[in-house]
Amino acid sequence: MYIITLTYFFFSFLGFDLAEKFVLRKGTSTDDRPFFRLGSKPLVKATELVFASGLSHEYSLVTTFRLRKTTKKDRWFLWQLLDQAGESKVSLIVDGAKKVVEFSAMGFLKNKLHYVFKSRDLHVLFDRQWHKFAVSIRSSSVAVYIDCKLIETRLTGVRDAVDLDGRALITTRVEDGRPVDVSF
Image (cartoon, rainbow, N blue to C red; front, top):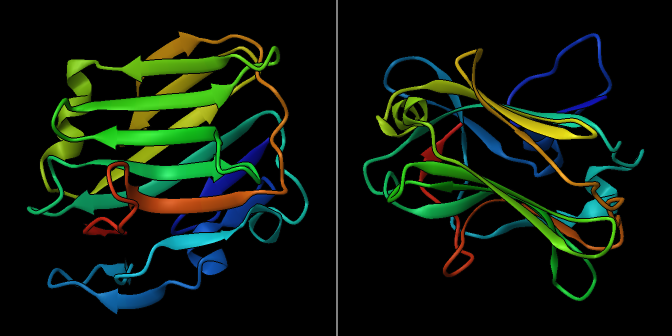
């Protein structure tokens, strides 16, 4: 199992630090927490540069972030992998207006698998405070965690392998592809 993080590693698993891969600049917030400055340019890299060793069929995405006042109602990709044609193969969307999280992936039969997590326990993610957010993708399920608490699990269809020939992007608005105002 792979662990993909934006801010830190789990030591017992092979991991990919997206903050390092996307060369994010460190800053310091007013409450003395380190954070990453996302800048004004879209954060896009070749997938093979981000996941040089490939991406397992089972993995977890883990990050700590805080939504800003200007972003708390936005709909944005926390993470997305696109193929060479620009088609989405895997994505994780945070939707502040609906207070939901969406996971999408390409199915084994080239069908789109789409799961919306809408538990009321997700609403805390949009309160503009720091939260640890994780998504665990297993062979037959997807689970969402906030602050180390399991929020919701969904059974999934069989997913297709991830194509490494495309592009990976993080923290971009769904509507226009611009970076979101969020602290990591």
